[in-house]
Image (cartoon, rainbow, N blue to C red; front, side, top):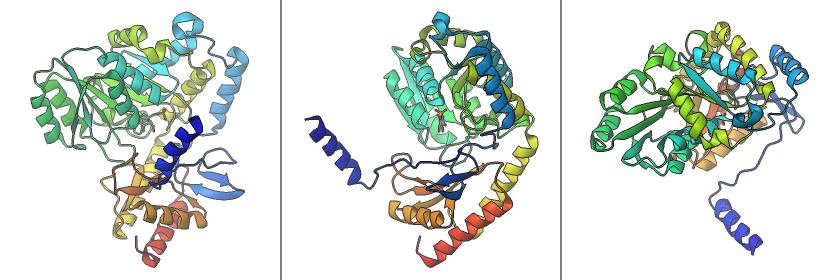
Length: 391
Ligand SMILES: Cc1ncc(COP(=O)(O)O)c(C=O)c1O
């Protein structure tokens, strides 16, 4: 019975050409990776500051293993709350210009826990989402069982219309990303927070892809637009520019106290490993000092985007290190990816349901470990393929 049920489910996926398999990476996941014994330039990782495998971070991990061991041992509310958790959270809060923060085992868990705990069982409340928000934000919203309203991607007129329409709801939570994970574009954050304030809504901004990359000391886009103190809930991850694993939320002390009491994704899971805390403290120290790396990364992003646009590739509205090359059909996207693969370039094909239908794309993510030569090789082969095939 189970096998029959599974076969039916798998066939449904196979029929849509959306069946996914795992690639095995035989090296660490940095700028150059080894797959099937071959080396590839990796344009698929979120290791934006090239800190994966960083020696200082590795040393911090070894020292922490010797001091604490790896285990979290129990929930933070039982006996898992070590002073190193508190130290990391105080530093992350200061980094994001907030009173307090809370760390989770992943960014995904952070988002589903924060949204669902805040909005569950809240009568007369609704959640308002950017159409292209990340799956973890959607899953949190769905888990809360609140009414969900959606505005057009990054469109503040559309957001205002929804805010007016939802006037009768007493509690409104408006959620966006600052840099969008699949399009690399920015929310107009100043207008976003002004609208939230005007209509008495709670603002939540996920800075997963801007933390470490934008702003003085890599504090994120809220810092660039000088509005960090106006955002009610800020989300970050340790899994991208920090090159580790884990997520965090920052906000007022009272909000974090509420989460400690009500957030099931925090309460009913084992404390994150003290080794993660020690490495995150080291990574944070390095991220803050990495302005040269940020400049190099922004420079590479600008050059690649300009080059691709001059070759008539659609890179949507990216303003960041995430550069989508929108191809449209799944088949053409996969063909392009495999032609790059043949040249030793690894770029992932991003297909629905991760992105909207007919917008299959290659998601290029640059890191400060890339060189001008790497990106020249990438656009040369993309262009060569474009002129030899119709994509
Ligand atoms: C915007 C956004 N938020 C949250 C996450 C989840 O973070 P993590 O990978 O740490 O679970 C991601 C991951 O890709 C993301 O893009």
